Image 1 (cartoon, rainbow, N blue to C red):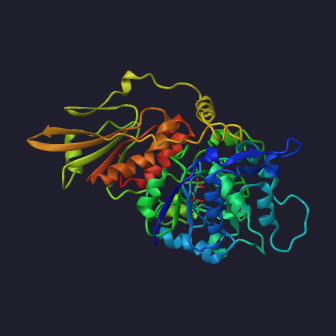
Image 2: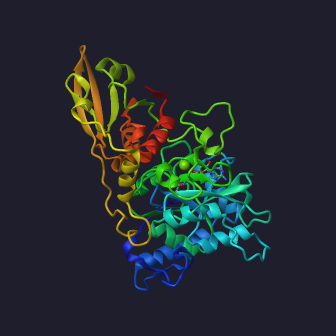
Image 3: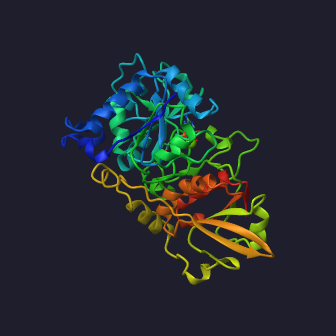
Length: 440
Ligand code: TXA
Ligand code: MG
């Protein structure tokens, strides 16, 4: 199968409008497509393909790239599992463009009930965080229009309204609920740029929409408001602190474990699989542990003496190896809630800020290369520096793993961040713990 990469500019698609009289703006907002833009034309054709073909389409969201198919057609959904080589007992998130579209699914094929089928517990979250990086679990009705392959036999389905204008426009144009996992090959790091998708799925799908790099860089937060107390099943773009502030969510509990799952039945099926792993083994150094010595690096860099390092804020590399400079920087003593708020205000929710948050240029992390002599041996160090800002770390981490892996390093050593820095940090560490062979 030939794979085409189709560049689309979000800003060329048209404008978004919502009736100001609408009680709930998500209910009545529409994309008004430009009639003169070739980008809008291309997107309309891809939407048609998504609606009719059994081969999934890759598209950008604000979190990571998704691999989308019509969630109502079994053949189309099976196409996703096939392209990704993903185990089919791992359910998919269904993406929507409006609340009306979600309500139609919740009512099932033959219900005429007029009451709002969206459970009341979710209203404050929806108002605050949609469109955005939050996935909620909803009851799948008896007579559901969703293909059974979407839910992998569960009685619930995950739903999300993304805030990326290309994703929203694609779903609105296709006019079907869109099942979409991350567009990586199963077990590989999630794709945060169209090139990552191409690297994994070239020849397996026909269309990749290139909408530039993703704004958030880690997947959506998954919450279950149907259980008592409500649970966070996957940390992500929206933080625990932010969720806890919503009425009905004060007691929200953590429903994921931050270790590789063995034996016990995980609540979110995705938790039990190997995830986010490049080919090279990953060694994760948690925030409080000292940096590895040159001897340790030498031992990891077998057989070819090439090691990749992802630095965040404290490690410093020099002729004698890595040194931690953490003592030079004052510890962040502000309350967690303040840090969390700061993190979230970097990206604004709602339609106003939507277009501003679309990145048009890939901020490629440069790889620095250096040779170090140690005990008569030569060690080659390839280093990517992500800096100290957690928003940038989240945005760049999956790409850094992929870039180093493509250089053929023997091992990737990562300077972790403290989970206590807020939930985006916890989300990054959650992914890294799954990617790591060894956590130090
Ligand atoms: O940011 C995201 O959420 C991205 C973009 C493309 O939207 N999508 C994504 O999908 O990460 P995926 O399929 O890679 O991850 C879905 C996660 C898995 O951990 C899965 O187990 C969980 O959501 N999930 C989906 N439906 C579920 C359900 N009914 N019950 C429990 N967990 C569910
Ligand atoms: Mg995934």
